[in-house]
Length: 113
Image 1: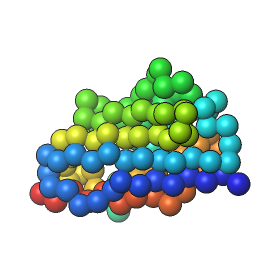
Image 2 (image 1 turned 45 degrees about the vertical axis):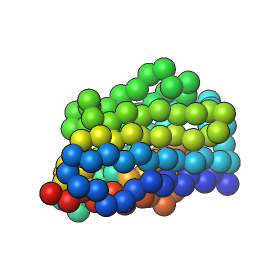
Image 3 (image 1 turned 30 degrees about the horizontal axis):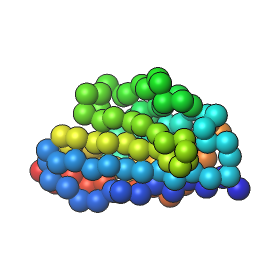
């Protein structure tokens, strides 16, 4: 079974940083593009970042570009999201997603102003 477990969320003040992790299992992680998205009451679901299978190509939503960095370690089947200069608008439940739309339990990020 596909399992995706996001972790690393928490409460942080505006301007702070967090690093999220997504541990994947049950599929050939290193062969597939992966995605981070988030869900918030105000904005609904929005995609955040996409990373190619080998990590060489990354894409970001305009709202996080230059602040967030996605990466992956295919030897560990883990994807990361380094989030810097966080603001209240980044408050959301963050999920990692595989190409088939599976999302595990997300990790909550709350940014206080």
